[in-house]
Image (cartoon, rainbow, N blue to C red; front, side, top):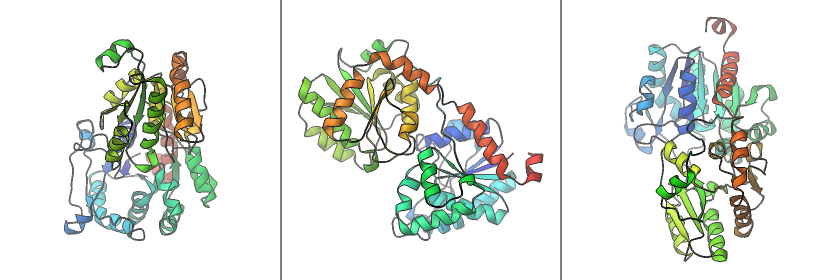
Length: 396
């Protein structure tokens, strides 16, 4: 079985953590089957470039895959009716070249709009089946945009299959009218070797300069509205006010348009200890998870954020919003708490309770070990194989 993977959410040398979970997925698929990668790079300026022109260099770990990064046009907001068509037109030379270099049996596209919609169109032009992976906001948010909703549903109905990363996303698509038999939930796996408890947690905390007795709340994610980082700031500030300066620390790993607002909110809370460490490589994220006392995920909407599985694999309990697919992976004690509100009083009370439970760490680890990459890849192989025509499946 030869797979052609298409998604802008894929890392490159300039942004090695961008689309990282798709990177993990593709690398593990490539260990079983030949995989080609076309990772478009959306730019308004792509109108001025030659179609198929590349932009980007592969990460070292993806060099063997030889991914290509064609520039494609993208019109923010006003382009909902045409962005998928623009993607398809500008990607077509790169996709044809990839198929000439290695004939594909099936296309796998991640992110419903515009990537998945464009991939369905391109696959049809090549006589190939296309399976689309939906991840979160591409369904949770985009189905609320009338024009974009119509485009997404038309193309997903033409896909050979749809994979969702949470059952909540699957139910959202079924409610929107997709056939039940065509939509399957396959959660991501977790790298349990990288994300594991520290052999000497106290030494690691000293290395980070954390004070004895200081409780550390960790936030990992893009600094955007849907991830709600300001709620984490307000909750830890409330804890600091009630227990005194130096008793709590907020560590934020991530970047985004709300960075300035986060810095301003931290400055508005005298005595709040906060570390904004920016985007970190997975190994550094794992070390922070090993050192922290609780992960805070105050998102307004989600699929199933892999950061929860990764934290649990490190033995780190989690406080998270009861939204999207989060309850599918976090049921509550002894792995953490789900909250129905991200009001500072509610969130801070949950953080305080969970941070006090060092005895939950072993249970967190054991729970996370249920989510293996081996099972994820097996399930992908079944869906992709079933999407192929019977003759091609027999030869694969």
